[in-house]
Length: 150
Image (cartoon, rainbow, N blue to C red; front, side, top):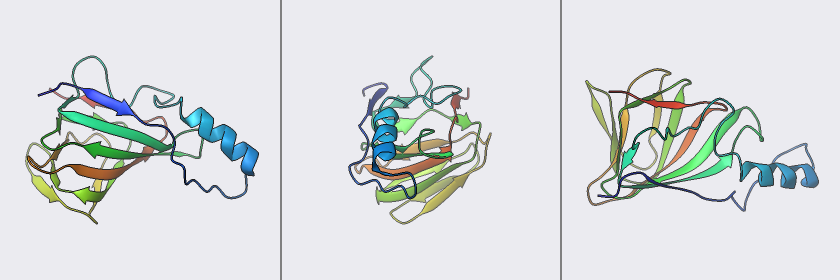
């Protein structure tokens, strides 16, 4: 398997932000394309592989567009993350495919339409099904970071 192939896509084409005007929205979207890493630390640590397999993350809104970080995520079939924690609550909305989210004590199957809340500091991992990709919207506080757990 491929280790840690993370691709960060550009900003979404269909963004609406009320009350800031078209010029400010355009400027913030351009800045968002360069703001994958958060103010405190990058969301994905680089000290060791974070995923086994292939994953893509496409920022939608980051700290330049409000107080939350939203990304489209895609784990290709068989991809699994390391056990890790976040320094803020994390929410995942499953949009396509199948997979699971696990702690050391429990595993929950994921399918489209599910919403997952992972409280700050809870060690967990995400896995795409062996034969099916997993797609999701990832939401966390801007400035969040992830730390692998041994």
